Image (tube, rainbow, N blue to C red; front, side):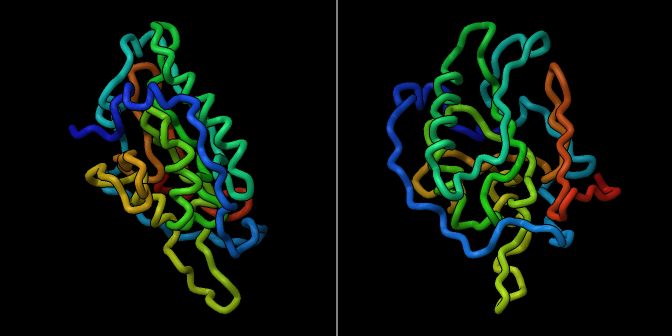
Length: 224
């Protein structure tokens, strides 16, 4: 199966490389607030029950994952007002990803959602996702958060500018794992997950990823 990320050694010499500070991302809507309704969203290219094996998503895996598995996990990463904290964490993850010792080699990054604030806009994927992880050598997979699926609207345009999760699906549930327009000049390929809610099967454990949609408190429907 085609690789979904750059070889691990590609960024070894770039760890800690300075990234220019960005202008604050551009947004026109306040953060998600109480009363936001459930949003219909597109399903991915996989078939129910939406399971994927780790080895089908990642071309290079450490040995011995059935005994010990190291991975990175975090969420709410979008640098909506100040990209500095996100870049500091990304740099630390880059350095940790270069640890290739038998007891510490990370296999992937599982993202817990809210990749882009506040409304999952296509235009924000480069400054809030692709640029901060430009030198991060591991594949990034995960589930969407409420901000990824909360479509941008205005009082004058109540219809969303983009359908819910449309940009997230292109970049995480790609059928071919190619490089999307959102990636700009970053060479990271889109992830080939089967669906926004899905199960990642690994030699050590299974990850059951739910998507609780946009409303306050979350909603999980029967199909999950």
